[in-house]
Amino acid sequence: MPLRVYSVEMPAKANPSEPKQGFRYLALLAGWLIPGAGHLITGRWVRALLLFVSITAMFGLGLAMLGHLYLPNTGNPLDILGFVGDLGNGLLYFGARLLGAGTTVTTVISEDYGTKFIVVAGLLNFIAAIDAHNLQIGRKQ
Amino acid sequence: MAMTHFNAVLLFATFASVVFAITQRSTPKAMLRYGLYCWLWFVLSVIVIAWVLHWIHP
Image 1 (tube, rainbow over the protein chains, first blue to last red):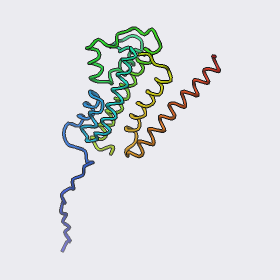
Image 2 (image 1 turned 60 degrees about the horizontal axis):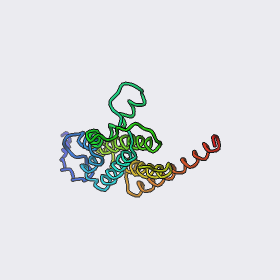
Image 3 (image 1 turned 90 degrees about the horizontal axis):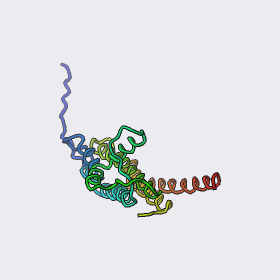
Image 4 (image 1 turned 90 degrees about the vertical axis):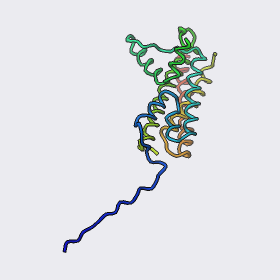
């Protein structure tokens, strides 16, 4: 008589670190639009707060130093890259554009620091948004 | 708002280190250590590069 092996599926235990169901790119998109929002969606509110403060402060200091906001352009490759970096700030960038900020022409060195602060804030926000995505899909704990 | 180069470096290092620590490490202890490590490297490398540039082109 052949031996039959039956398997009984056990219900999976609830694990708080398990990836959440839903739109797969929600944390990525939210994290890009609002710094730290992606981490907030994944339940890491302390990390979300630190990211929000750091990136927003960097962007705000850049504007306070009269940094320049890059516009969409097809000219100098560095200007194109500057625009891509600025775009990383998400709604901060669009809000500042709407308010007419960042339109000064750089004449003193602190304004150049401001421009770099804004670009780097955007690039850091890209990294933070990708990290939030990795948390959401369970690639990172 | 005018800012000295060194003050700008300190702020830049602080904010960048916070983001690097959170995104590159998983546990709070490792984040703290990595954040401090990044901050020190940012500041030290700027001081060293500044002195090198000063000697090259005083």
